[in-house]
Amino acid sequence: MISVNNLRKEFKKTIKEPGLIGSFKSLFHPKCEKVVAVNDISFEVPKGEILGFIGPNGAGKSTVIKMLTGILTPTSGTCTINGKNPSENRKSYVKEIGVVFGQRTQLWWDLPLRETYGVLKEIYEVPDDRYHKQMAFLNEVLELDSFITSPVRTLSLGQRMRADIAASLLHSPKVLFLDEPTIGLDVVVKDNIRKAIEHINKQEKTTVILTTHDLADIELLSKRIVMIDKGSNMFDGTISELKSKYGQIRELNFETDAKDIEQILNYKQHFGFNDDDIKIEKEANNVTVKFNSNAVPVSDMLSYTLDKINISDISVKDADIEEIIRRLYKQGV
Image 1 (cartoon, rainbow, N blue to C red):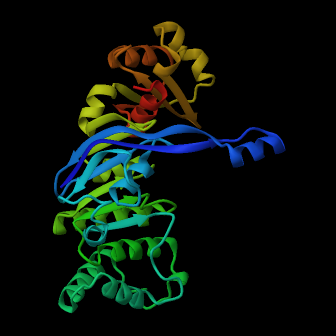
Image 2: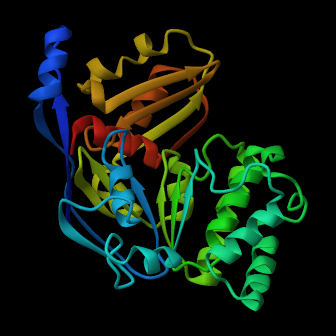
Image 3: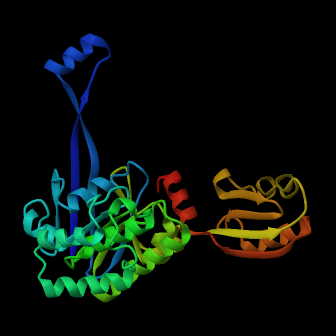
């Protein structure tokens, strides 16, 4: 469905010298430097997969998405989606994709939502029977009925996000690009939108590329992630592979009324942990110890902790994906 091969994007950046003279020089004899925003990225996405596409700010995610949607043309390399080149076949290509940007809307601000969908129906040339069938499906999944007659400007953030997702799916696209679809939403609305995305993916076999900083979205919706940093691939594989390869971080959780926990336990000195291998968080009587189990086995941490202080309700679990990715970015793996 999606094939990206050695995709590269370069920009020219004008270097301005300080002061008025520098301004004149940059006007008549500008000095430019080449900035590589995306550096030979490659990946494949089969039909019907939900791919988590992640990276820190400035990693090149948005530039890749803009090339995949045809907004930008690659400097070199190729990307084809459903056999089409996004920048060369733009008019026919856009009818096969849907795009949702969490910070922007494609809806008409003052029109009632129902009329907005009517306009989009004409733009995408959706036949009447298909339009009514798709609207019935979207109403069921996204629960639009309660606000479909309201002007877009009166909608809450959660309602607008559901409305935007519906607008992007009105023409039954083969690929859906979601950029921060749950940003700024409360827990209940986030959960509803995740369930809707999952349902749409299963029912319609829609291929989804999900870009988000909320890693709970990734864990709940995606089995596979592509991680980039500084314009280059860092990781491409399943979440289980990521945890297996980089996720030997465990969480030791317990309750204690002891004070000065770090001084009493003194894990670093006793076990010789590096700063990156252990982290202690305490809130009231609840203590969370995140540690590298490759450096010290779980059994040793448990026996040492139980020997040093009186604790209750102790548990050990794998660290979440957010902790693993934080370490990856920090180490630049």
